[in-house]
Length: 365
Image 1 (cartoon, rainbow, N blue to C red):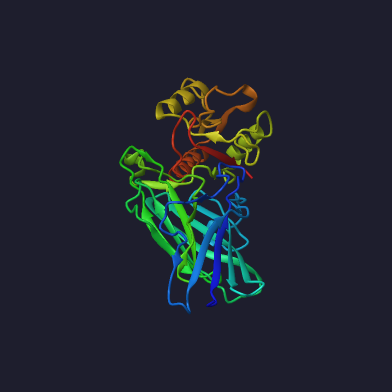
Image 2 (tube, helix red, strand yellow):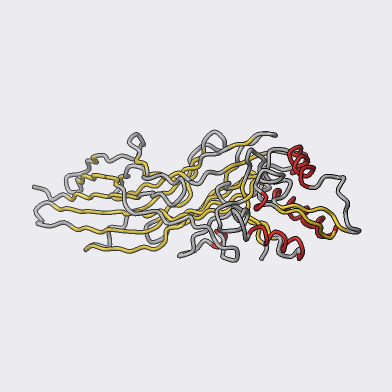
């Protein structure tokens, strides 16, 4: 009988829950064109390839960086970042190649374990975004290092993006595969959009392709064009990341906030689990200010009435018990700077209003 060879290629991965709503497993597509098939050639070269996909490993990331830690902009092993505009995840993948030859008692096998490092870069001032991938951390085992498969990694966005077709991110091998693509979310004025972005991978060996495995980008991307008169341009962020505003440079205000954060529910204190939230409207801000700092209060010369939580916060006004609130007199210059800092926080991080709205922490050193 004419000798023949049989090769099996398997690519696999798992996405595990990481303290946020990451999916439990990766999905295997059964209706893609990348399926195993029998290829008949000349008698001397007749080969049959059986391609399979299975799950493997646990996802690494995202991790919330500390205030001074590198963000996802320097997404290199072993750093995995998560910020308001950056996300870096590493998806474990295993590719196995098994080659059998008629008449031989044992076949040759090679296993490739690596991470598909996936980085998504957003902009709070634009709805364009980038997605980049790189194969890193390769380890191999087996008896035939020559069975190197090829890899194709693509991304695809839903109808909320201008380009809904599959975009090739990288073509290579477990040793070398890196690349990226860009896309743009569709976000009309006064609307919020949630584009769904998914990354896929398949392996190839001997002219045949495996099934496609895929993983969605989680946490979710949110793009908006709310408050166009004030913010002018639409933009995109990861709302699951809670930003921090730095008030430590305001000597008197920082001391006042610090005294509140030390007691009660520690509202707004970074790391204590009770962030502040944006309130629902400018009218609510006005109402909160009138409740805590009414106009009839007599101000010391050069001072202004200041409150914490802020009037623009959902927790402002008299919503919280007295132990979690403060009212006092601060220099007018500090109060003005505080307003500018808060405005910058809301704009740069696209903090949306709500009941309650987006969360944030207040750092006072």
